[in-house]
Amino acid sequence: MSIWYLMNWMNSGGRTKSETETTRLVNEVIMQEDFNSDDLKGFNAHSKNLRFNRTNNPIPSDKNVPSQPFSVPGLYFRDLISVIQSAFTEPLSTKFHFSPFKLFQTVPNSEEVHPVYSELYNSDAFIQEHDKVQCMQGPPDNPDCKLEKVVLGLMFWSDSTHLTSFSNAKLWPVYMMFGNLSKYIRSLLNSGACHHVAYIPLLDLMGLVRDICTRISKCRVFLWDKVKRAREYIYDLGMPINGTAVSSLLKETSSIPTLNAFIDCLGPNFPVSNMLAMNLLHEIELGVWKTLFTHLIRMLYASPNGAEKVAELDQCTTIRHLLGNASEMKKLAARDFKDLLQCSIPAFEHLFEHEHNEHLMKLLYRLAQWHALAKLHLHTEPTLEWLEKTTMEVGKLMREFRDKSASKFSTFELPREQDARA
Image (cartoon, rainbow, N blue to C red):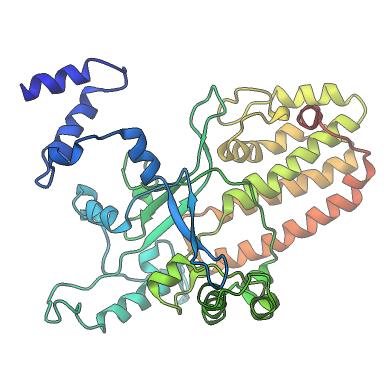
């Protein structure tokens, strides 16, 4: 009767229950040794979802009033330990690199040797952590453990994504990959290397523009001692968040009394800034390039016969098929803006007068060149130097285009911007 009940459930109700998912339900849920049907008495999926998709944060109230929990609805997450354990049982785990190494390039017809930067497991930081782990003692519950000590590199990404091509449904997942796995494997669509560890409520879009020197010399550091002391003022002594004691402690460094989850788990000396991947997608494809492309469309509309020039631009194709006109920028993902950048030189060529066209062609060429260098899978010292020089050249050409070309056009809102404002 058990099989009959299961098949009857699969073939009734909604149509989204496939044979594969039903088989997975049996293997991953019902057949588990610790599965107990008595735990499901009075079970309601909706109420359980409401319970599991919240996280509670204590909010201070007053000196004599205990902190009140603040619930964050719409948050789904997986325990990282369970994700790691699951990954080690998958066939892909046989391709993990646990012994880091360095790569070098010997220049032909020369004695020069350049280090090659490619994977996480041949970086200096990974090698240093590997050496540090080897000097550690065994776990407290098994100090005589003889198992190999290894470093597992966890890499996190997060970005809003469209769920379908015919609606505005969105989702904001948090992805995790393992740095011990080659990026050539991680980049394969069917590799199964990407793990969804959380789904967070949709947040407002944010963008930060920082100078190269600011990134290097003024890297943001989590001030553990000040944050810890401020939280003691608020939670233990009941002092107000905007009070003198807390403000005088945090205002100078623009800190906030929020404990960082990574610092809390990995210790006050953990460098959070080094963990964050460069956000090339938001800073360039959906940042600098999207802003430039949008203003170029405004300049086309402001030029003589602007509507005809925009129509001529929309006739150009890109690497991938776009659902609408490029100038309207409707439902374009980051990959679409990347395609627009790579195809922009022939598309914009001769749409502006000779002087402006020359400035624009130089700018688009250098920007595409920078984009290609930034996305190289393998880097050497010369390519990094080339990238740095190209970065300065792009900045120079961008300012030159602003002063000598863009400033000569009286631009106005695009039709889609007018519609959005209305």
